[in-house]
Image (cartoon, each protein chain N blue to C red):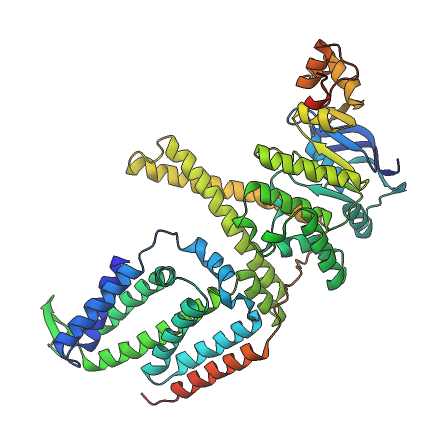
Length: 265
Length: 301
């Protein structure tokens, strides 16, 4: 898999004595489905903001497609274009008067022509089934619709890596299912997908790699089965085993079921 | 709406007292006031549907630039008109365009019009009545050692002012009930309005709704914990809510700035403008309406 983003020995503190990330090294590649787990305040959101270049690390280096990201504006733009970030609260992200204008904000900032911006907006609108909402105002939309618009916002910038900060935290089951369908579509395009979540069942079902955060550092990085088998790790990070994982273990199934359909009989 | 209806009846009565037969005046006053009170009755909150109504209006397809400049010209003509006819004609024309052509329900329109109307009617009442040492004019009554009177000159002055203000406000409603705020800001931007002003308008418009939502949530939460049990508690709760709103707005602004930066924001807010081409038929209609208003504005008072 092609490497997209590499963080080496990243440290970040919001203020002196309040470290949010310490000596973090991680590599993210295209085509991967990565779930980021950890309790509140473990550093997941700060990690995302550093990956996207909104926060500049106090120490460490960031590489994009093998090339180090410098401190200049053009380098930051290169990073922010390639690594899209979908914020947890959609209202933090939506600023325009209509959905179409909202989605065009990122591409317009890239200095693209009107035709290219229009093409990208139309593509993102089609991908997220937002056609009926095209001319609607963001404040008229439901929570699920706002979330879809916030994903389209980032998709229109055509990133290689997409970061989602707890995307399902305020969605009802129907909208969560729609989100999962959209994530499936994005995964088929070989985009790198990284999702911060507290939902271990979702992480078990969806991810092929887990990053577990604890106190601003990476406590574990590996395959879901190995991580969820490590009970000491889970206990120290305030996590628990997914339901299907426990059921599979109890029934001595191999391989362990990722979905209910995987359970034989 | 009942207040607006009563005020409208009173203002009409004082404005035409002594100039038309009493029975006719009484009928018109009762009819106008009653119609306003009954037709304008609605359950919606004012600020939220206005933008939605604009989005649904059949006049949405007309170029925002054409609507903006035509309305601006009509407002200028209305304010410069020497007789009441220009304002009156534009009030009726705007109402017809908004409701019959645009498709906005009459009660929605009247309900939205009620807020500026109440301000206007209160001002007109103050203009109609004057205080002096002697009784004068068509109607007067003694008070505080002098007389409150309605003079013929005040009636004519008030009549002209009422027509001008009502015409101008109706034209503004014609624009705001057929053109969304983002389209109006787009027009201002093309008219070389400073970027900072247009950007602030965008952000203020968007965040009014975020702030309203935040306020509603906090108010509901306070209400559910008996925060408005009595007047004293309600006052304290309201103060705390506003203080909290300020703190939360500050944090929200910081989050929003992060979100804008994450999408390559570099100091200028730009959006893709929606295409609403200028059609010849629309342009000719706008020209005809403006010429009609200009013709009426020239009628001497």
